[in-house]
Image (cartoon, rainbow, N blue to C red):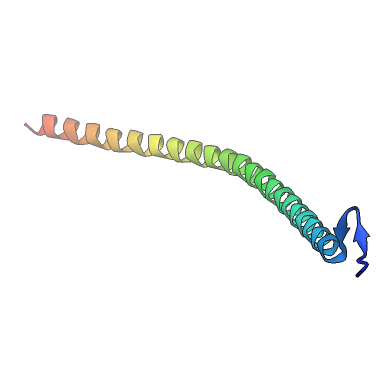
Length: 90
């Protein structure tokens, strides 16, 4: 009779196959955890950039609005001057 090596009721080929499967599973799990950590770091960095750019954009919009208001006042003043000129001319 052939005596086969058994480990926990499995022959050697089955035990090696099971060990390979478990090692593969653990390896994939570790790589996924590492990738998830990388993505989390990227998300945190993107959130920080977004907050920084929001502040910069707010400052830029405030500056543009102030410049726009000054330009509008200047245009309205010139329109008033033109209207006064046209009224006095008649």
